[in-house]
Image 1 (cartoon, rainbow, N blue to C red):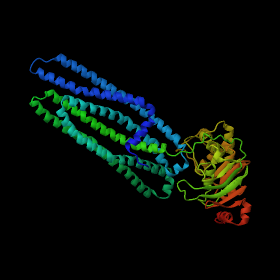
Image 2 (image 1 turned 90 degrees about the vertical axis):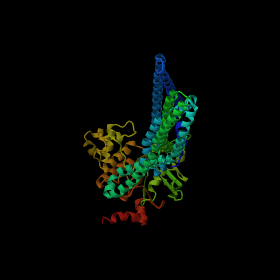
Image 3 (image 1 turned 135 degrees about the vertical axis):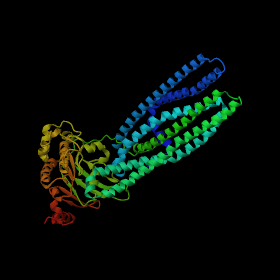
Image 4 (image 1 turned 180 degrees about the vertical axis):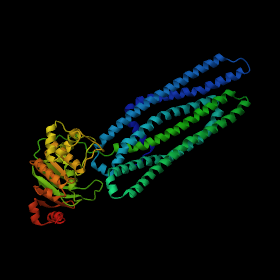
Length: 586
């Protein structure tokens, strides 16, 4: 991730919150007023001390002391009210901003190209939406008001100290100067550790998410020890960056406390000398002791606030890295749309390489004509580029050169949403969410009746399984629901059948079912694909024998094409591939 300094990251946050600027300014004004009212107190307490000192040698002016006491109560209550109000405003603003930011991140995920997810783990993306947004919200709500009020209090105390007694003020300033220099030095060194902490936490989250989702493979492979060692490495990296950032930031507060204590000592010694010389009254020393506390306390608050801001800026840089990442090209200007589709598809001299490996050509000068209603099978060894062609057809990736046509219209002229509406897809990796069976089947569809569900489930061989569930179609599917991989795949196939799109893409749609169920699904698919253009990616070549066109791929190129009988008669690569699957059974 590109490193950014704290102020650059926070500048983006404030630009993001520009609609809230008036309320933020109002909150800051309240913070300043609260700090100023707090500063008035020591001067009034000094006056009370002088009145009490004078009363020791004559009559005590209780009325004057009472008036000052009432005035102190008023300013301290007002200061507390202002401080509470500005904290309430800032908490509301930051919570609203974090809510909006999570929404923008979710929308952004739908606008970034597929290549982004090839280079970023799911756990890291999740960490940005949850951990980083929460850290940013807490950092802003806790630090911004404190820094503003502390800065106002610091400057106000500085002015009041010089007005009260400039010599003592210079002494306090001299002591504080060294503390401020040390504070700035520590801040400049600690920022990179806050950034590293958020990065390492995102990496750790991605690893944990990956290992948890694949825990069965992990156990079967007996890779527990290796995974634990890797986890320990990532966990140690999080620990190290946490330790270093917290250690350096933790130095700030005790360092300011030491400076404050030294300031007390200086005020007491120098003030005592000036009092004994008759230069200042005793009340000035009392006022300055309080001023030293009010003068050094803001430095401690600023130090703590800057620590929070460093954490917040590290999270902000990760959040805006995602928000500012390249998006899919804008297609609002495109007016071409396909509604009534026949299903002809043409690949015209298509070239493609993945964005992260532009020098490695995946598809080289691919051309093919698919007529409406044809069943096209794409076969070949692993890594031959079978799924890549389907991804290009769906415009999950953009081709480097050449064109793809649907009913004579270049897909580059169509909006992605329009293309996606033309296809139903069944992928090798099944996807179900927590919800009822009905909700999973009719996902993002309207007008689906119970009769439609019964018909499709019966065609897929799901009817017995669903009716054996406690609540049938209304059974909740959760992590605790026992459902096999084959049954999950049957549900996704049924979902695709319910979509009733004019074209189909089946990527290893029967890879997780047994032979008997495969026969049932094959019959259903034959009925479903009747009159529809369909693309079938298959490793089990027995399932695509009835395909109208078989494209045989190797190393990204189509080396043979034709139907099953034609290719078998050629005795080429397809024939060898087909026979190799049956040699093991004979």
